[in-house]
Image 1 (cartoon, rainbow, N blue to C red):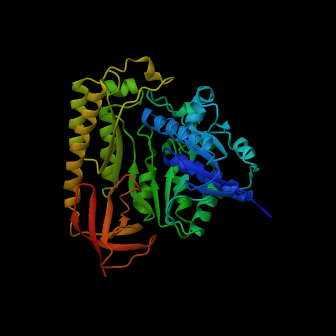
Image 2: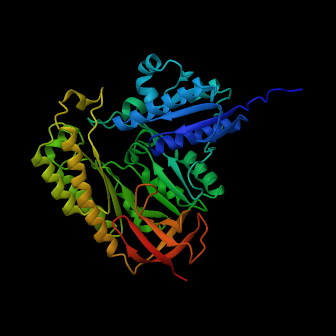
Image 3: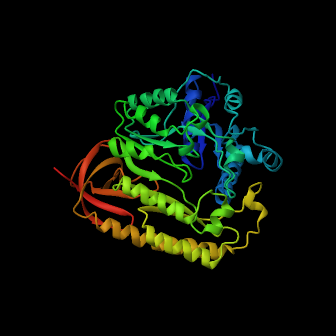
Length: 434
């Protein structure tokens, strides 16, 4: 007679950080499934893999706290093994091994085969695009390149992800076709730097040719561009955006700052005049385009004058989407040699001021949408509303469209046309156009 039920070996993958990490976790899970492993994402499992973020202080703290939380579970017998991978592990492996030695093993960002071996699985080279997606079924991230060759002074990504390495067009098309076959309708193209795509493989910036191939994939309705870089932007991409209905009139282009002195210290390779001209060219060529950007305040040496220049520029440019972060002093970056001289409370105050300006801009732009009709994809049902997005909105970071669920039934992942009836600073309310 059996007195004990053996616990099944279920691997729980926990993902922290950005969309690139989400993609990496999905690839890991696809490999594990191909080896016959029972794998879940952020559910119960007796073997845990934590895919960490090591980008800025808040993200590092969250990663360390998550590791410590699972170490407590391991000591309590609630989990058997804990493995750590991702950017934090790549960047601080010796420190982590010393400070949290009870983790079964640490792996860096390029050590997937080793991690799979530790989990009793084989790395299968033939698996192009085989992943277990963790996003809602209607959209998925498509990582077109890894690493970054840019010299930005504040950024630790090259330390964790290495040099820029593009994925061949044919492999990305295969991956897109497999995603489309599984019901994905929206591809969100990600990389540390989309605009550098192809330089290593094709000796030219080749994002436009990649888009030309991806729009041919049957079943894909939207293709969205994330994380472009302002220097050397391939303008032929805008021709395709204007011509191809599948390519969303949307661009995520982190600009970071606008004061010439700060841009120079950040090693961004541009100026206020060049950046402003670029945005004006975007809007002239694709007037319908929504531009999302992110800014950093509190960078070393940022004076009140620099900040006032940034504030005025945000008011003048009226970006459709904008996020603002406080500077994080990261060791082994070029800016780490500078004195982190802006007090934390001043950084927070400046970030809040920028977001107050943006909130007003967003409210005004949204008010102008009342009465207009938009194609919307339904991401989920939440409370009494179906929640969707227009082509001008990316998941998790942008505006959402709320539709009263008591008046209409909508399927997740389906597209519908809505008329905007009300608007707030970051949300729209709409009714289905019958």
